[in-house]
Length: 221
Image (cartoon, rainbow, N blue to C red; front, side, top):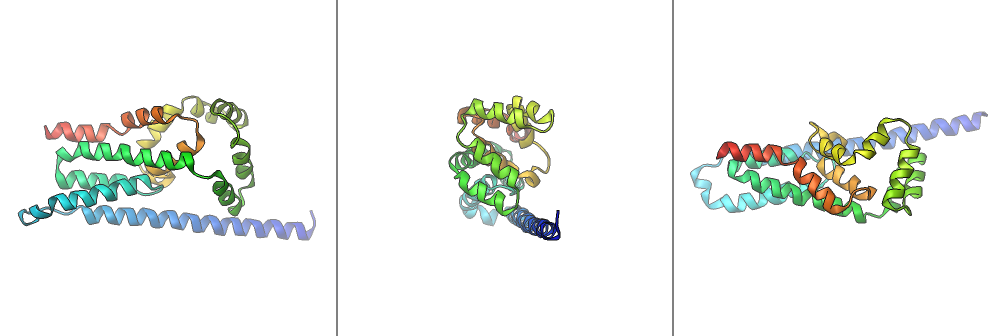
């Protein structure tokens, strides 16, 4: 390779690293903002706040759904804040709001233009990933599974694809999953992949996110 080619490769690597740093900084900013909102909601209600109870609950629910549906946002912290704020009886409300939020993120992913994804990957100089999106776009669900299983660089990826429902459930319950996209990001990617029908996704997600709200609700009883 001549000097010109080497210079171009070095320049591309620098641009890739710079742009990835920008994306990571943006993700970190989202996490910090979500955590701040969680702490903002988590205050002690006193009798003088009774008249504000319904308004505060409505605002908290809306914020929670928005945060939970947004990738890389720690919506779980806001959900915990709501449950601590309003007691165990709010656990079922948080549970149903979680289902609504993750359904929204899946739906957005299902209809999200893949052309934007390709452009983002190219902007990050991830050429192979960009080409993979182009190749997957016209394929049906079963064809995508077979193609991805054949293209996977290791034995782990085909295993995860084969047991994708369990994988989704584990990722939704993974501590600190906001760093890999959070519930909103997971739902968005699952929707974009088109590997899981909506009704199956809702069933898996409803089971996966139920333990914590259910435990809090039963403790209150």
